Length: 282
Image 1: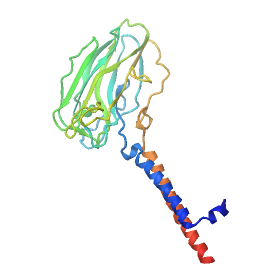
Image 2: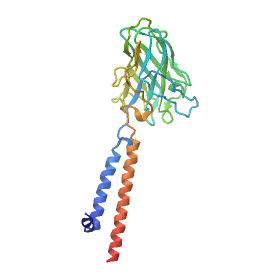
Image 3: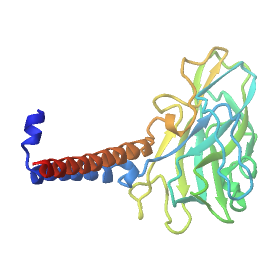
Image 4: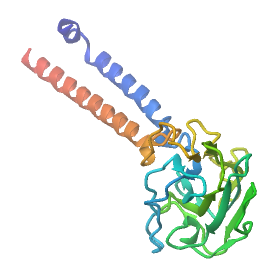
């Protein structure tokens, strides 16, 4: 093999290296991290909002803790849940949103309180003055309709990439039969500020949005599960954007591509220096 390499003219070796560099550069510029595709926005249920908060300083991102897909509770028991947003695209924004929370049959859940406008809880309260136009609580009948619009400044990325849209305190109706029940989100829209306008969830809009993935009882794996009088199904909670199904952290691929490009450049320089030295020794 070494004898074959020594026999190659420098021009052939250089052409091969340049071709390899070209192929690698083409692959890298088509990778998600290079802007070829924007990942969808994720909206879903976190069945334990511990660790979810906002700093209320106007410059720091909100925090999402571990995303819990299920909670185990006895009938008659109460707990809190969040509807969260993850992966707001860079240079994009959120100004308003609406959705329905669906459960049942049976109507096993009572929504006691809802938090839409807290500066220490809600993403939409970081940049302005959100107006809550949601269905009143308590609400014991599905669906529960939610609409919130920010009449101040929209929340842009940077700095905001994720956070809690809404927080609810709920109670499982006394006498609910043992079982695992799922919550779902319907009629979801996420309105942008200008520019651009439109719905983040609509990939066919003008301009198109990145689309949305909903983590609820209809998703695989399931989220928004309430296990009444029994344990939750065996499913580990999710922590951090790197672990989110359906969202690829492509920055690692970009770093690998850059490292390979640097290695090939180094190889070309080394080969050139070797070839020059060999000619001088003749």
